[in-house]
View 1 (cartoon, rainbow, N blue to C red):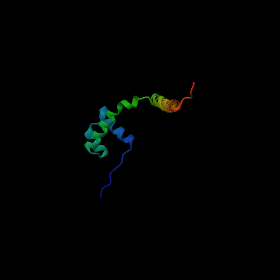
View 2: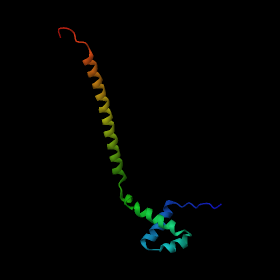
View 3: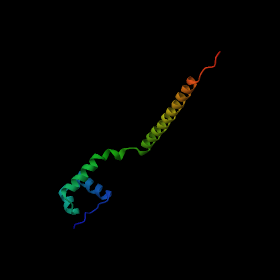
View 4: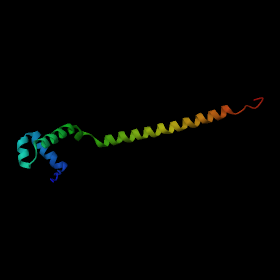
Length: 101
């Protein structure tokens, strides 16, 4: 049985960047690192697809997530308050009225 080799994300990025930048052709990278062309091609595609995420601001994303969580808590609280008010209204409306009032 053959074991599959595992490569670090840094190594994958290095190989893909070498091919994308033109420092090496895909064939050269395959020969040098003893890789199949399909593997190098896949790494290159993954890098290109996720390149925009490099410039994504994680601090802004966490602030957005925090704000969303806060708004969800507020909605939940308001929904509970509404349920309590509906129940109180039903109880008050169902009580028999005293005569004269």
